[in-house]
Image 1 (cartoon, rainbow, N blue to C red):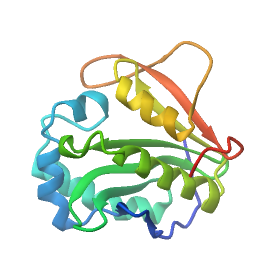
Image 2 (image 1 turned 30 degrees about the vertical axis):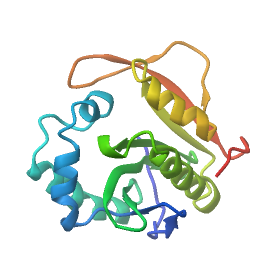
Image 3 (image 1 turned 45 degrees about the vertical axis):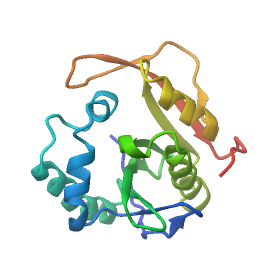
Length: 188
């Protein structure tokens, strides 16, 4: 079981096009609408069907997760307009092991614009450089080539060995294990 005694302070993570911030109650409608895209629950652990109540629970759980230091969830927003573009988070933060797992999704209308790569660079840079973690893992379903390209573009390396089997609402699913470590020299 992952543990954390980290006191997480909400960082200012942005580049010239996107910003990351914790989700707020005002995001519930946009989150609910975005997650109706069947690819999001297919390629993530987001439940389906996804309701406004699920979004309310996600938003409410975020602040307690930040306080516990176990998870750090963000929404990805357009820096100019504030429009919701997706979500990303560090999960199972374990300061003793120096590791965490990352997961993300991007709204269908925002795909193929570099949003996922930008957000992943921001959150992994923070994890490795500011939090001092040594390893961030991304589990990518084997039938999700777009996400494989995203993690590889950011510098994640496919770990040796067969894919791992994950429990998923659709049944057992195979996933590649990718890792980014502080010594990878990945662009951040």
